[in-house]
Length: 460
Image (spheres, rainbow, N blue to C red):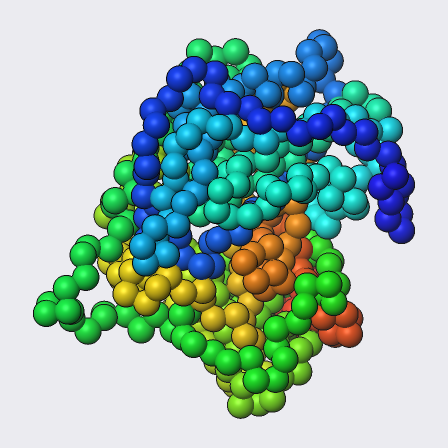
C-alpha cells in the first residue's frame, strides 16, 4: 500500500525483467567524454510521464513501450551495456547487450488524484519508480530503468531512471523520442544517434606544454563545509512553486530598466531564487554563496556538437558573492552576477572543463553553500507522443537530485489548473527555512508600487 498525507493507493508490480536490443549489436568498449564522467554526473536521474486514457487506443502501454525500447536499443545499443571504470577514474561503457530494466505494474489510483500537471513533488514516487534491488549503482548496473504503471482510469504512468553520465537532458529526450516514434509504428528513429564522445575529451596530458588555464573554473573550488551548510536530504522539505508571466513580470519590476530589457527569464528567476534562498538560510555575512547554472553549448553558432549527439554537452558556471553583499544589494545584483557567469560559457570553456577533469581526477563541483538550477523548459519532453497523445506532465520526477542530493532545482514547463503556461520550480530546503523562503519569494513576485501605479495609470 502506497500512501502519503493526501493520497493512498496500491501498486501491484510484476518482477523486473531485462529488455535487450531487438537485434544483435556490436560488442565493444566505448569511452565516455571528460564531461560525461565527472563526479557531479555520477548519479541516477528520475523522470516521469503521466498519460490520460486515449480514445481509440486499446493497446497495452506496457507491451507497446517495452517493444519500442527493445527496438530503440538496436540504435542506442550502448544503453544496453554496463559502465566500467578504467585508469584515472575514466568511465567507459562495455556494450554487452545485456539490456535495460523494465517493470510492469497496475494501480487502483486515478490520474486526477495526482494533480500531476503541477509537477513535483509527487506522492509515493518510490512506488511509481521502484528501486529494483542492486540496480542503483553506477558501475556494472543497468543504465536505464523503466516502469509502466497502468491506472484505474485507463491512463498510465511511465517513469524512467537514467544514468546521467550517459546523456544530458537533450540526449535523454532524443532517446525517449526514438522510443516514442517506434511505439507509434515508425520503422526507425528520425534522428540518428551519434556517439562522438571524443569531441569533449581532453587531449593527452603533457607536463612540458601545460599552459595556464584561460578560465578560473571556480565551480570546482575545493570548499570545506565548516558550518554544516550541507544538510542531509532526509531533513529537507520539498515544495514546488509555479512561476507564470505575472510572477516573471513582477520580478522584472524590481530591476532597473536596462536589466529588465537585457536579462532572460532564466537569469531573472535564477537571481531571484538565489537571493531569496540566501535570506532564508541566514548565513554569516562573510560566507561565500554560490549559484551554479547549467549552460549547454548545443545549437550555438560555433558549436562542435553534431546533430544526434546524446552525451553531456553542458558546463556548470558559477556566480559567487558573499552573503552580506547579496543581502545588502537589490535583486538586480544577483541577476547581474548570474548573467556574467552564464555568458562566459562557450566551446573553449567546456573544452577547458574537460582538461580540468583529466588533470584533477574528475572532481565534483563545490556544493557547500551552493545552489544549482537546470532549465529543462525547452528540451521538448512534453511533446513526446508514445501513441496516447501528449502527456499531462513530463519531466523530472523530483527536485534535489544529484550525486549530493538537495542542491539542485529544475525549471520545468507546466500548465496550471487555470490553463496558464508557466514554470514549476521544485525546491528542497532545510525544514525551518522553507517558510522564510516562501515569504521572500512573495515579496519579489509582487510588483513594486511604482510599477503597479504605472500599470493602473496605463489602464485609465
